[in-house]
Length: 323
Ligand code: SF4
Image (cartoon, rainbow, N blue to C red; front, side, top):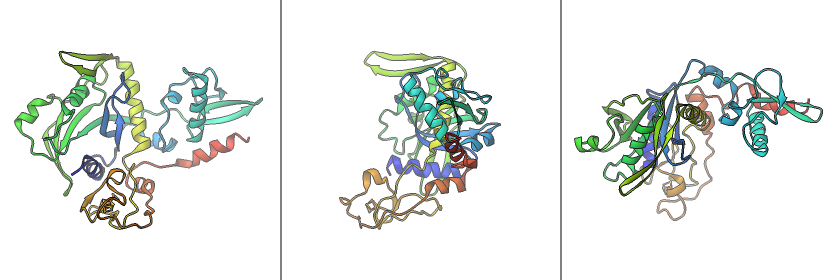
């Protein structure tokens, strides 16, 4: 089974089970000093006290720079000078924040004045990061990845999920704080082999940057940088979710599996497939059909607390510029 298939099946099982009230997302940056240096396979963001207030703002990711800017909820202010970045970038952030309904815009004297439509809420609780390695026989960079998660402490809990039988030798090779799950994609059953130990998210962390023979490059990441990166991670998870796949234009794809999740299930291969890498005319089972019209956004709205466009805030902010 491919890592892609394992990942989608695990996301579906988590959303159906223990993390039904949380935000489940996949493939998100989990490093701070070296952005993109560590990608977390699955992220579960548990709801905090003001989760409903976050849902009410927008279904999109709110840009970190908009949240961190000097634009507040009171009187609208001229956008220039409110951002700690280049003017061009600030302009793009303002446009995006208006488009998604986080900022509202007023035109005065030929200038744009903006304000936040609502105070940014305290909406997320614990963040759990999951590394998928269906087959422990081909571990790749697994040990280094899990050592990074353990020493950086960006997420509250870090877990390894596998389909393999987990031996004592496997457990000894990964940091003790990392939890271990055995997940069976066909049934959706999950067995906890080892509980994770909570990581010190509010303390500085050590990010592993590169390993060379006899030496390791690291960066010390402050508690404030981690807090900022956690908020950005939670925001990206909220906006992205995990249904970020397409369906192939192939008659063998039957988009619903036994567990009633809309996944790209292939009746020819008898498993969920990754259309981007597995499908096309070169595949032996390919039968050309129209690409199925499946609304994964609507499915996310039905199955989770997420709302794509709450209150039409986006439409209202678009109208504001003509007032
Ligand atoms: S292209 Fe091949 S792998 Fe993809 S759905 Fe069709 S038969 Fe399955």
